[in-house]
Image (cartoon, rainbow, N blue to C red; front, side, top):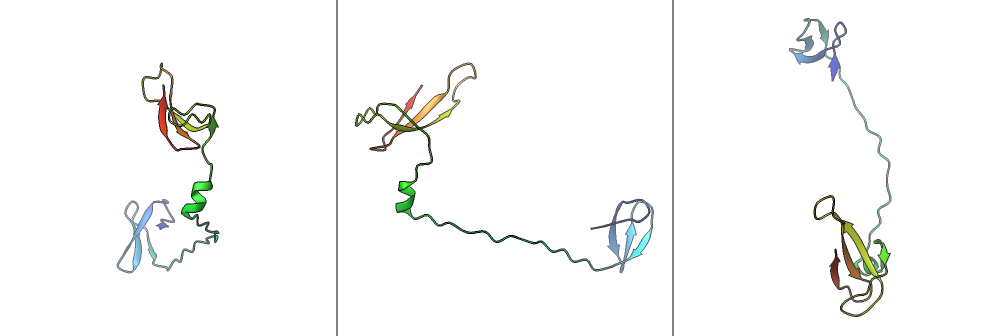
Length: 102
């Protein structure tokens, strides 16, 4: 992108020259090269076996209605009006059973 030397407006190429649409100033077309330096990043590949071992969700003490385990992963979300409490979505750490706690 080029800008007019006089009024600093955007100029457009026209017939081998730049011409400002606002003030009419003309300039020559020059070549511009834009380069972007990028940083190489390391890529981590997670296999399905490794993914099962990852514990990324927080845990809380809650009894699983299916197996009786006393620990579950949880997340909370506001599912009703703002003056009512959040809903907790739980998943048992042992059997994977899912349930909600209102």
